Image (cartoon, rainbow, N blue to C red; front, side, top):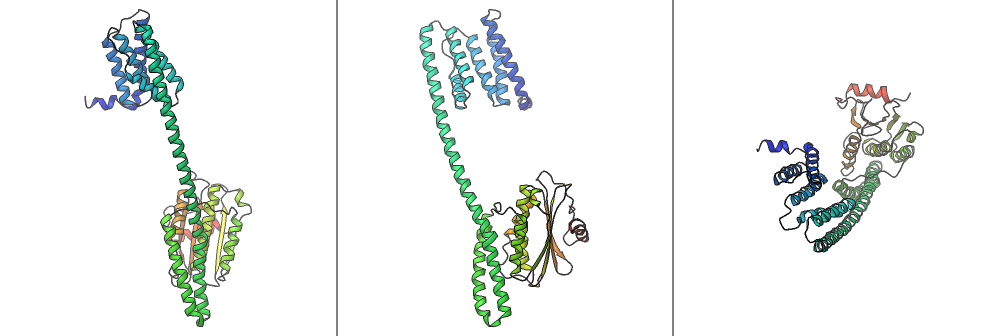
Length: 396
């Protein structure tokens, strides 16, 4: 029995049990009303067994309907025994009212009360009892439904408040990452440059740099704790590139770029968002790592067949490491997570000649992940990467 019960109570068998029980019960009840068959407890037992199997196989409205029919059948099969229909039927009525299944609840209530009137020897008394129990069940159902609606409304308001608060937090973190952290890094680098060019100002520049470094670390801890990201407010890639050019020009870094006209009309919103985040983060990395008076190259292309957005950014790398507090570590990891969540690829590595290369492909959607760029087995700094980039993203 222990081996057969799990097999008999599989979910896929629930409709079979429901149809079988309803057909048997319906035939017995209406056959009895028409005087064609006599009801027996054996028949009721078989049909209740079917309903029990249905209850084990599926918790759904099918079970509730079958349960009510079984109760009616059991009452009809024992008309001589006193008592009223079990309160379970009224419980089902209340549940259906709470679920807003008003038509089903009304039909079930009417069926129950009519059946009770047909079986009773005192119709007048039974009518008063039926009216009382019916009004009680409907009142309880409506009260519970009203209370449930209030709870749902309160939960919805709470969820909206949480979402608004989360959105404000995301915007704050994004502002810290996109502007404040980059400005602090810029200040640190400028103090280093001024100290090298004017040694007499070194102590003051060092003090100023230390203040900016400590502030950068505090901002970094906030960003890392939140791990939040919101869509960039800028929607024009060309303007973003020009902003990056101006930012890099403060350290005498020249950015040359190749960008198709009106590319925003060709790419999807997800590609636009990801592309802007990529550009901002790569621009920040160039500012941190590239030496003064160096050059950087940016190539942006849209593949017409696979509809991928392709970005290739290369820049010179300065000797040594950036000052403490310049790097946050948040932007690149967050960027990689964003790119991979959209089905894209992000590869970065050093190339010969003190060059750093970042290569990104973003599909039009997460479902469209056919790549025309990097192979899955690519390793940073490989010859195949350099050849592929020259073939795929060099200006025509």
